[in-house]
Amino acid sequence: MNVTPAWNPSLTKRTLPAKLAAYRPVFLALLTLSVAPVFGQYTTAPVVAASPSPMASPAPVAPKVKPTPDPEHPTSSIPGETREQRDIRMAWWRNAKFGMFIHWGVYSVPAGYYHGKPVAGIGEWIMHNAKIPMAEYQQYAKDFTADKFDPAAFVGAAKSAGMKYIVITAKHHEGFAMFDSKVNDWTIVRATPFARDPLAALAVECRKQGIRLGFYYSQAQDWNNGGAAAGGKWDPAQQHNMDDYIDHTAIPQITELLSNYGSDTPAVIWWDTPVDMNRARAGRIEAVVRKLRPGLIQNDRLGGGLRGDTQTPEQKIPAQGYPGRDWEACMTMNDTWGFKKDDTHWKSSATIIHNLVDIASKGGNYLLNVGPDSHGEIPAASIERLAEVGKWMQVNGDAIYGTTATPFGSELGKPVAALDGYGKKTMVSSGNAWRATKKPGHIYLIVFQWPTNGVFSAPVVAQKLAAATLLADPTAKLSVTQDASGTTISGLPSTAPDPVASVIDLQY
Image 1 (cartoon, rainbow, N blue to C red):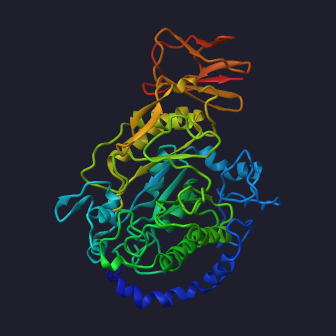
Image 2 (image 1 turned 135 degrees about the vertical axis):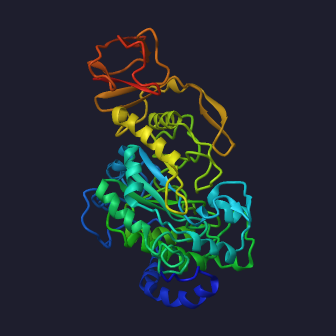
Image 3 (image 1 turned 30 degrees about the vertical axis):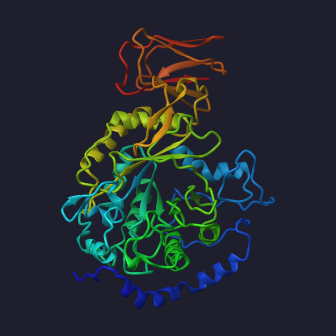
């Protein structure tokens, strides 16, 4: 198979102007938008459609009100959105609770090593941390074969764990497009032996298996296309005008991602590390999203003061969550996001289940990462843990999906200091015996430390309870009593139905 050589700056200088000619109408539209206020009302615009999908959400209704924030929803990517409109737009995401993050790119080729020596830090930052020159780093793409990539296996692994959506790195900070971008040749289609678009294959497979697909896009840091670099640039070839990068690389590629994969994809756009982003740069990107995909769920990392729709704590679970705010904790299974062959510090399936329960009890979503290797395989240790979590979810998923935060709060205990996944100080919950979630008609008590005396005591429940059952054994005969001092569930088996976490369903 003939493969175009890996991208380099001189190729871009020759080919980029011609390729960008196709985007002239978009740039003219953006120029017009730039003179309007950044926070103008959004309007519905046509989207390039694929085959109809049962997952596609109805387009949000443009607000008729003056664009002022709803006091009950102070943060939104849509100016003037009412509470009811936001609830409709965010409903699928809130109900999903559990998603898969996929960090996959050229960084999986060096896999944590440079010139035969291990490089400290997370795998996908190896170019930055080892200060690898652009021309040298681009040669890794020749060995990015993805020869074992199977979209059905990726989506199937997520589904087996009980996950409802996937977010994959369409472009990480290395600037490598994991899709068929026409902006330059630093892409999986033109710089690797794989020579195909894995995002297109995943979009098809996600529709087939009933999973939503979102895209991560590094809008600011780009170490090969002239974007920002968090620790400063180390190669003269990286010197480039930031606004030129935004207008000639980021915006055209974002336009491709929002236009080429169907009306239901992406379901989420996940920005990251807004280094050197100001209000004007973020506003130009935001204008493209409002034009092409009004109502698209965005996280809080675009930059320029734009807070998006979701808060994104990384490698930690806040002690109290973010009351009143949609939020999503993103976390790794080991210590890195991108594949790093020496990182075998895997979290147990029990820890992952505890994290999921803790996050759901505080009203958040859990975005759990996998890092495929350069052949396109998710590590076996990740697959094993996903399957184990899935077995728990098959029995206890009702206590996670579609739930909201605990009606109590005392079970969380007082916040205490701890270390997050990066070894930095954070605050976490001190109470670790049990958690609670709720949905209409149900309060779920998710118990980590099972009582041996057959009795579990919970705080006062405002509603009159009709019954108590075990999700793992609905035939168990339990009794429940309520008084001013609290709620007591009796008749529990002496052994926990599940060794990790057992669920008592209080029904009212």
